[in-house]
Image (cartoon, rainbow over all chains, first blue to last red; front, side):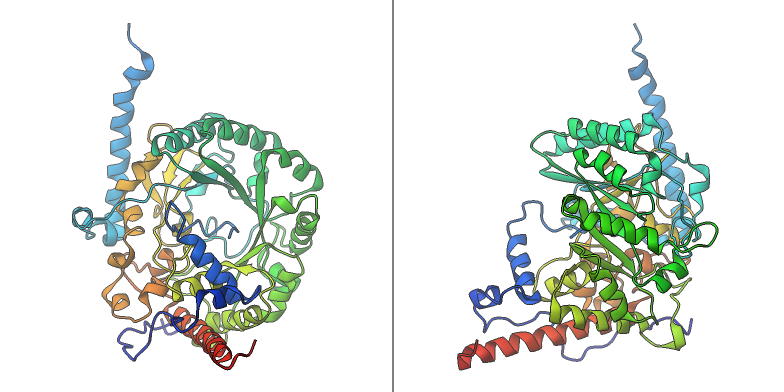
Length: 64
Length: 430
């Protein structure tokens, strides 16, 4: 089992799981053109209106 | 007068119950968690609400015209494909389609996704695929959007078949593993010949304007130790609407190959692609978009990462309603629920501990995972990658260190980008 990655349990160093965007207006985030960040924020905003909630789709099919 | 259908029902229901009991008994030995030790009643008391089935995978053909060395259907421990019909019989696919229609009707679903899968689904034949899709669209109420997708190896995806299937509104995902030498090392015909050229031909067809609407995207299995940028650039050459990068299925009994004894070769490979993609943003990459979404406080839309409930069932060619087929890599019969689409409704699976375990979010994670600061992003990775014999699925992912490294890297890159934008805003820079 040497080749298996070890769980990183107990790794309690300070780590903020969420990116803090509170200093940045949403309009600024959304106006960054076609950047990955802008697209990600747009997706997040769209997901707020998803009536079915966010579900995990079948992995072995290529879809967005 | 005796109604034959009604009369047969109790016996059928009894058989179904026996099938469920037998499947659960086998699971309890192989995977005590969740089948013996997950407290389903407590989960319900604590407010768990089942997420109704949304993705239905139809295994319309059980055989394949390729013999990929990592295939989880044929090359791992579960060999149940051998005992199933090669092609899904008409009574099975009709029962499946009708059940999807009833499901959409009774649930008031706004949308369902039906994925035609295999084996190689195009072996089912264009005419039958068309008939199935026609019946499916007729069975589902107009108020429910039906997405029909197919994941193919591309070998049989010709211009003629695309034209024939276009009226049925099917979108096609193609599996290709990057550059020819890497793809052809794994994805081969039964005689050992590489299939890159055939897959590339199919993708070149889908790229054409007249077929673009039928192009769902590309699945690429990560080949650690190979050139990640060459792979990504090869995928980009096919102009995909979306890409997903899949970790090869592995678990604590059958760990992933780690070339050169590297500690985290899969993370290293993914990070190289991530950095190239984050700078260019040429296409969508589901895994990376999911990690970013989770880091921004959103959810994940795939099985590889995050804690979103899985709402997927598989219907095998013999009518068996099963869990996600990637579990075939864990132990023989790992996907079984004991249910059959000819006798049971789709949401019957929502009583199966294996299905429930994948809808519980953090409550389904091991203590080790819950103690980890990234567990809400990682979600212990793909459920299949947590399997350990005699324990089951209550473990970290066998890719734990890779996932942590990838998540930390994305976190760092995203934080840096946000900080730069905040600084730019303060100084008035554009």
